Length: 250
Image (cartoon, rainbow, N blue to C red; front, side):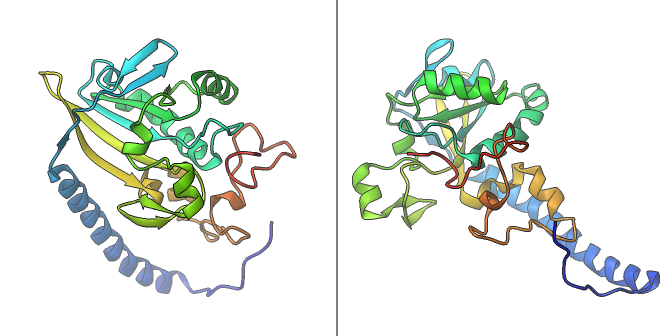
C-alpha cells in the first residue's frame, strides 16, 4: 500500500470547528436524499402488459411469479451474457452487498431476483461458485433485457451506440448493469415503478459508502479509474487471477 500525500494537520479545536461546518452540509445531504426518495415514490407507474418468461431453478416463471408472494420486487440487471465465462465483477460486487440485506428486505414485503441473459446452467454454476443465496433467473429466451435497455444487439454494439441510462450512449459491450423495481397489486397486475443505471446503483454498495469515510477514499487511481482497479470476485482475492476486463475472457 502506498502512502498518501502530506495532509493538513490541525489542533483539536480547529478540527472541531471545520467538522461542525461539514456536519451542516451532511445534514442537508441527508434531507436532500429523503426528498429524492419521496420524489422517486411519486413517479407514475407503467403497467407491464407483456408476458415475460424466465428460466429458474424452480422451473419457468413469469415476471409476476418472481414476486414470490410479496407486492414489491427489485430486479438486478446482472451482467452475464451467454458467451461469457463468468458474471461481471462489478455486478458481483453489488450482489455481495445485497446478500446481507436479503434477510431484512424479504421480511418487509420486498423480493429480490438477479436476472441475466446467460443460460440457467451457467447461472447455477456461477451462483454455486460464489455461494450466494439470492434468487436468480435467466432471461435467455425473453426480450426482458432488451426491453429494459440493459442488453444490446450485435448491430448496436458494432455501431457503438444504443439507448442506455435514458439517453443515446456509447456502448462497447452487449450487456450493462442496472436495477429495476416493480409493484404487483391485489388483482395481480404488475407495474414498473423505477429503474436506475450506472452510478445510480451505488447506494446499495456499502463498501463505497465506508470507503468514502476514509482518508484514501475509493482510491480508484487507474488504469480504469473505477472498481475494476481493485475489486475481484470475492473468491479470487487470495489468488493470482485477475478480472481485468470485468466480465469475461472471450
